[in-house]
Length: 135
Image (cartoon, rainbow, N blue to C red; front, side, top):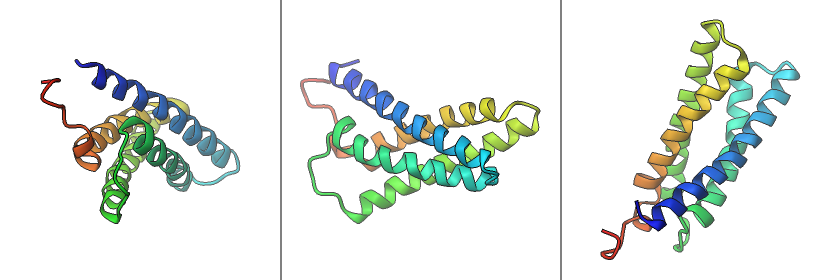
């Protein structure tokens, strides 16, 4: 593993922690206000997703080119898939008798795997190709 890859993983985890904090705080605030969990999940995930786009683009993947609509569409697709998976896992695990917190945590961890892989391989791929020196 190269120093560049370690830096990217560390930055992604740091940004992910802030996204998760935004998502969890907003989600549990909304559910405490009796917003249905599906709607709360969509709203809280979107707030974290917007934070994630800005910080991952600028800091984690250090994209230099100007953003275009296709980058945003790819980002929204990857995050939409992660959001849907997170909700399905949240629902299934909660139906199995686990707490809302445990269900949300497991769903979030699985969603993070999807967003990292999708971001690195599809949304920002040209920024992450190793140079000849790193191979």
